[in-house]
Image (cartoon, rainbow, N blue to C red; front, side, top):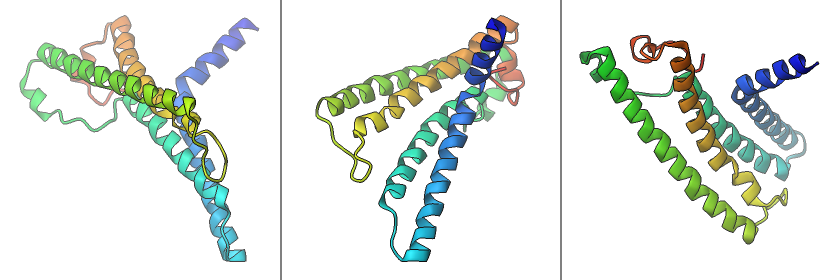
Length: 176
């Protein structure tokens, strides 16, 4: 029983970004289809679908950014590193990624402060009447998750003894 629960939690953890982003995109597409269908049939839209599709788009973008960081498939200019020896490449890459993580954590902290004030003085969304601070919590969560996935990639490679593979085999999945 405990092993099954552990396996289920590990499966959830390893695939969180993929599943969450897919659900958000699916919900967004469903909302937009409802909106188009309602306009086509009745000539009038369904207001909540527009708002919900915006929110699910926002959520999918910030969680998918963490997915891209986890997989190491984000846009990165790396041709200049090919002139360096692999160990120097690794040091430079780790330095740049450390800057990236620091910037992400700074944005996490700033956005969390903004959201706290948004929760202190709540602003409701126009049609769904949701406190916008709750919707916007995805911003610090996404940046923190992105930072964790970057650090996790290094931890996984370090434990496996394949840290140098990050720069010698750039197409290798970073999180594996």
